[in-house]
Image 1: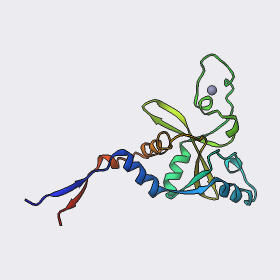
Image 2: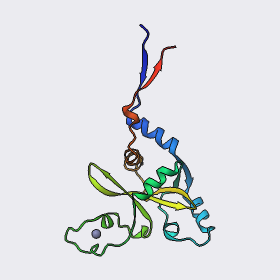
Image 3: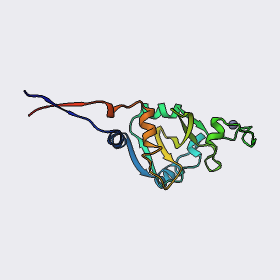
Image 4: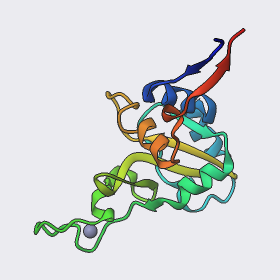
Length: 163
Ligand SMILES: [Zn+2]
């Protein structure tokens, strides 16, 4: 009997494919140079850039828009300085260095929370960056984005006929 070969990728492999397909790495310094040469910058385009030396242009504009809509400008919350257990998205994402930048907020099994991911609209291109260093971005960045977009490539089987 001739059968079909079912190919399955695990989640890690699926996420690697997602990153490869949907993001283009660029040096953060390039982004800074581009921004420095844009006239009349407003809003988050003039906000601080993340510390990591690489940023990523998003290849699909609709997905950039979706991510952008799920982001919040980092600003100080009125209750931020209370030490009474107060917690909100603003407090959660508060990072003095990143004031004015847009932090990506996601919903997962831990509830709604901020991430180390920041998104910028630079002349109509969506660019993301990570404020952090020294950890694996497959644990906290790419996996979060893969889930955010509802991808389930790791659950799908790709059928290949016998040759
Ligand atoms: Zn707060």
